[in-house]
Length: 280
Ligand SMILES: [Zn+2]
Ligand SMILES: [Zn+2]
Image (cartoon, rainbow, N blue to C red; front, side, top):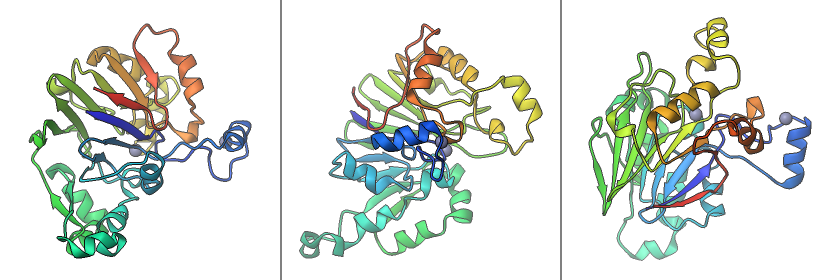
């Protein structure tokens, strides 16, 4: 399988719009942008999430096809680029398709656990299906979905009060786990261990216990893990390589800062970079 991390930002955008701190100014001067969270497997065109910059990301990486999209959860940072279905699915957008069959229709996978959230918060996605641009599937938890030699398994994180998904992507003996967001208090599935590659959210910086105890339940610290928890989780999951993605512009987190923070730990954990590529 061939993977490209299309976007490594969390819910923000780096540099932060309207912020003129030294780091944001430096990033702007270099033309550096960190965009919303998304991963794509390019041999089959399997995309995970559609952040609002998805059209730019697909262009930047010269992606030729998107045939399937899997969603991790309904939150806007993972879904607001869903109008990409209109770009890709509308026959008028591809003159050569006018003559041929109406395909391709993109398969969109919204697993059972998160379907109620999509019905409540994201009605436009059902309009796209009505227009014939996508076909929505709602697989059961851990139902394996085949794309040639690649298998994608949706795994519900089984959090107490909210529905969040991770995806396990397998080909032969290779295994990748994508858990980019909102993994605090997730339940551990045997599939998560000993992978070749794990992508996980970048934790917030601060004293884990103190910061969380002081914060109201609605605070991000009750939805996301801390950096200390990143380290513990990476040790527990024991992947060959762990990539910290979904960095937060609100904390002005950067690849360079993360590299320094990771230095004392003798683990194969690396910060994400926009457009990083993996051949497995
Ligand atoms: Zn700034
Ligand atoms: Zn997120």
